[in-house]
Image 1 (cartoon, one colour):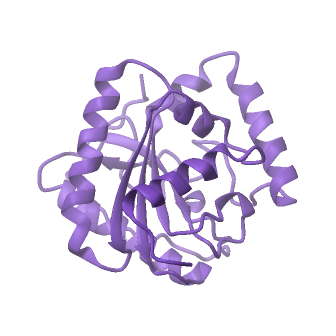
Image 2 (image 1 turned 90 degrees about the horizontal axis):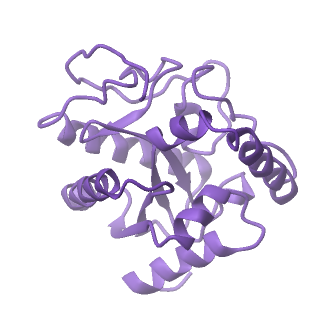
Length: 230
């Protein structure tokens, strides 16, 4: 890897999504509609950019809520570490998510449409009371579809997935994604489950966890009554 500027890194990410073999059709749709937003931070282990990342994601939430359109995605792209392992990235992912949640809960409650307990099948990560499905990307991922050249955390609005589930096209789209991932990666992600069957945290990192793994997130949001997403 070589040093890269912010615009170069964002261009790399967009090219990653545009790759014909990349399986996520929702990400491709967001890019085609110019609804992918990117923030470039420094080393993933450093908390220096946490406030900037959070502000970027708050602005993304505002824009997403105001847009009234489908397929939105926010990507936080890190300039380091340049080399990592799947285990090391996993540690850094949970560190950054914990730090963001600790800052967020000072102002906002957890999205009441989902659970705040990472062990719950109805859990979703929340910022500015907006639930997200989180995806980790990095060069050492065991999943080829997540092998982006730099560490990254992608935030996709959870409500969009819930909205899609109520449409006739959802099952077709899910089948296409899984078929393309099988062709791209040689197997379907063993951590893949549908929302409500197991916690989404098993899918965030891309790492295959053992049966005794426990999510390291400790979320101290004030309790809220859980309501299904609208």
